[in-house]
Amino acid sequence: MQRGKGEMVRGDLFVMTGASGVGKGTLRARLMERVKLRYSISMTTRPPREGERHGVDYWFVDEATFERIKREGGFLEHATYVGYSYGTPKAPVERALARGEDVLLEIEVQGALQVAEKMPEAQLIFVIPPSLSELRQRLLLRGKDSLEKIEKRLERAREEIALADRFHYVVVNDLLADAVADLERIILTRRRIVKRMRPALERALERDPDLEAELDEIAKRMQGR
Ligand code: 5GP
Image (tube, rainbow, N blue to C red; front, side):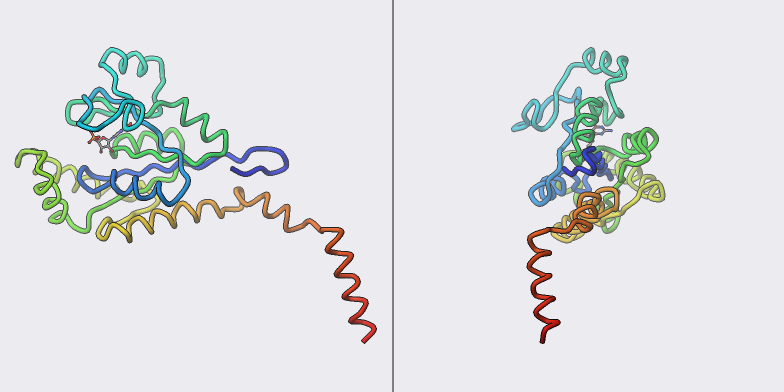
């Protein structure tokens, strides 16, 4: 959170997206241990999985509630994914950005493209597998999907990778630690842009009278030598 001449600098919105099974969830968790980010909790009509908590992993809602919020324009983006609805509640994201906090969304590709349309300043990070065969291996080992579904997901991943030009950054999730380090660098680099560094620039132009007095003394002594 930084201030420049008394006005709050808006935070950045980071949108992490990529194919199902590429490891977005794990990357997000590791990244958030390393950099301060506000994670946007999505709303979904999918029932909770074991261990998932309402208001922590997702806001679990029924169809009617989701539809109502959608009608009221309450989502920054929303999409249907394998039969369930998912959406990013707009107000909390807006509030956090206005407070100067950096916000992270972890969403599927169609939703990420909607965010890009609505907020062109959003930083879009595309996570890709090292290869489609690696992705196939991960989906098979995860054992959540039928073979037919896995083939569908792979086809979808292939189509999505072809859209890479619409994103700002690509992170290859081969070695987890490397991918996390890449994500961390992307975020830290954004925090060094001029707009965010205003307070440091202002401080760089300041002079401290006490230190200046001491330095004048030193300069005088040097002259006398
Ligand atoms: P899961 O049901 O496995 O938690 O998530 C399924 C997919 O939905 C994942 O690719 C996840 O990133 C994505 N997802 C989660 N929340 C949102 C959201 O708010 N909007 C969109 N568009 N996708 C989401």
